Image (cartoon, rainbow, N blue to C red):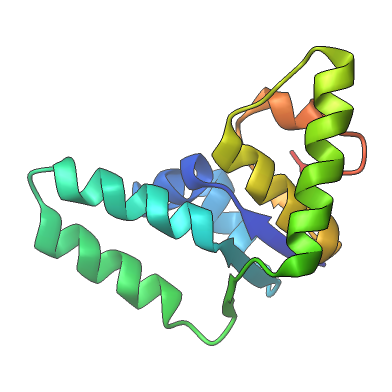
Length: 128
């Protein structure tokens, strides 16, 4: 199974969460959406351990099983479709999470996250 990881679960991993560590150690390919990297870098920049946290992130991203997911035109189409679906249901989600969902759907990945609002999108396969 190939998985994508959301910002909150990647932070959990960096903090030593055993559930996330076990999931990520099971030999799966791990996709990190570009938006997640942006959110992490923003958090690093406002923190007190910038150099150390940047090094941890770069070490993780350099692992052979980790891929960075970049948006493209197809991602934009998925994003627009998901936006309309959520708007019609009256259940918007944060913009960054909409882009993460679009990448997950596009690449047919399972998403590792703690954010419950991804459950509003039945086409997003969530990992517990």
